[in-house]
Length: 109
Image 1 (cartoon, one colour):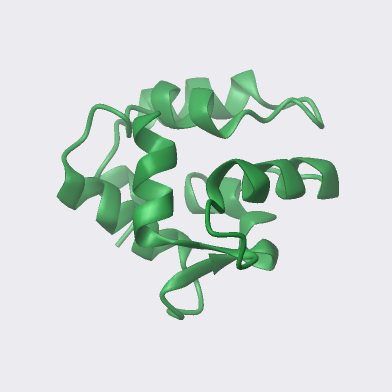
Image 2 (cartoon, helix red, strand yellow):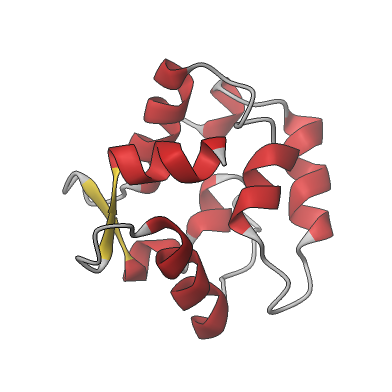
């Protein structure tokens, strides 16, 4: 499954373009811009599973670096600073990874 089966391609492109500059990524704004915030809990869960590339049930720091590539194959990699900030924003229990509920909470903020 691809993100474009859940989200509008134009919204994805606009959001990726808005965060093209290194160290500009804001996960809350990004998920709002791509339209994920307005989607059903089921669609947010589908998005989580797409981002959980290794199917571990969590999105780990290494997977966060490549989050844009799940929205568009030519999406840039997140910087280390952006990756750590993304993890900090979502990892509410401090275990160093993002679970499905933590991801949904971040999207809904």
